Length: 334
Image (tube, rainbow, N blue to C red):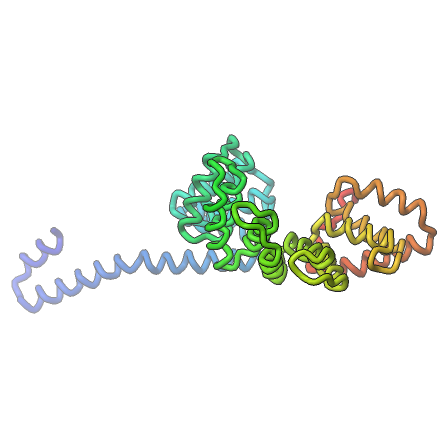
């Protein structure tokens, strides 16, 4: 309307053309404000992500909070994770759930997956298997690999929905196609146990091997057991020990105890009390319920030299781990 009035009042055709071009350019500049702002938000988001990876949680939280208040779904999801795990803020599961809910409503698949988990665990919201299933399904249908695996687990166990091993297998396969390492573990279990499929240990081992190669601790442990027992593969005690150790390095409690028992009893390894103590202490630190009782007995049997050696071996083991893996063995009593 303003442009129309200005044009009507212009006596010169040339002047009318100048006014028209000026108005058009002004309108175009207004339209470009949103993309520029979006680029700024994207840059801020990446800046916060870099800060988070550098463990500068305060800065990451400050930026994500600002973006979240403006409706930035990815920032809402990441801020929710900060509140869920206490990174740069105090743990607040109710607020984490709320942030996941906001981001999920915008269609953010990762947030839908996290929202489902809060419902499944009852974190900051009343526990609801049905709601967990609904949100896992929403994320899985968008191609979120972890959600596809989680949905498969619910379908296999009949949690929040009627058990359907065939559908579970399909979702596990979809997740595996995307490289979701835990999906290979689940597929191996299905074939090893014959859940909804014909039992096939050779096929189970194939899945465990793939999951283990991608860093899944459970797959590493079950691959080690397969090598030791000869299920679906030739017996190879050296390979078994190798994969037990890999699972243990990722904090797998049964692998830690298994190694402790092997060195305590001399099963397929030279008997070594110091190494047995080391593995049982690591198991205790990782939260194994019965490790402390066995550890006390071993400490009573050991001499000062063996105890000192166990401490040296433990520090050497921990020193080789990256911080996230080492955190699983932090001494809770300290």
